Amino acid sequence: MKSSSPDKGKTVNPHWRQALPSDLPAIAAIAAQIHPELPERPEVFAEKQRLYPGGCRVLVAGDAVGGYGLAHPWKLNRIPPLDDFLRDLPDDADCLYVHDVVVLPKFRGRRIAGAYVTDIAALARAADINSLALVSVYGTQSMWERFGFRAVASDAALRDKLAGYGESATYMVCRLTA
Image 1 (cartoon, one colour):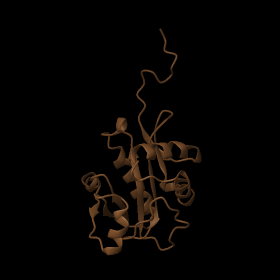
Image 2 (spheres, helix red, strand yellow; image 1 turned 45 degrees about the horizontal axis):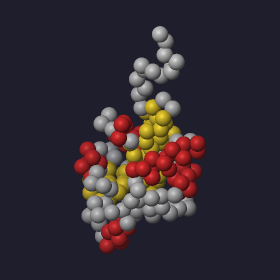
Image 3 (spheres, rainbow, N blue to C red; image 1 turned 120 degrees about the vertical axis):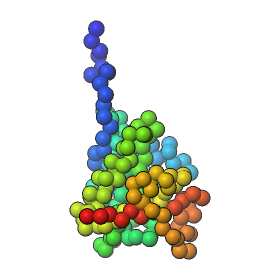
Image 4 (cartoon, rainbow, N blue to C red; image 1 turned 90 degrees about the horizontal axis):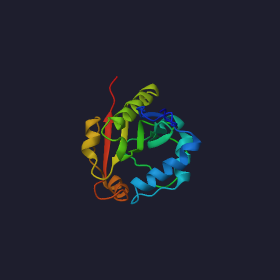
C-alpha cells in the first residue's frame, strides 16, 4: 500500500535558508515559545530582515520552520537594544552581531547552530568584517565557546545593557581568521 504523504518514510534534512517575509510569523512564534522572558515584537524582527536580509535565516525541514537566526552588522562592545528598532546599521561596522539563534528541541544535537555560525562567519568575511559578537543567555556560554566565542570583560555601560538579558547574560566575541 502506497503512502498518501509524499514525505512519509523520507528523511528530510533540516537546512538553513534565507528568511522570507512570509517566515516572520513562524519566527515570532518560535521566539515567543523559546524566549518568553525576553519578548520582542514581530516588527523588530521584520526590521532586522529589511536592514540585513543576508543575516536572517530560517531552519527548514520540509515545509516546517524549525528555527531561525538573525544577525546584522554592528559595532564591537555595543549591544543593540532588545525589542527596539535599530533604525539603520553603522557604516563602520566591525562585527556581525548575532542577535539570536534558535533551534527547536526536536532539531537540536545535529550541529545545526554551528552551521548557522559557519554561514554567518562566511558572510562577515565577505564583507571584510573580522568578528562576530553576541549575548549568550540562559547559560549557553559553553555552547558558544565551542564555536570560537569568548566572553569579554564588560565595562559599566555594557553591564547595564546586559542586565536586560537576564542574570546569566554574557557578551561574547568570536575573532575570525582568514
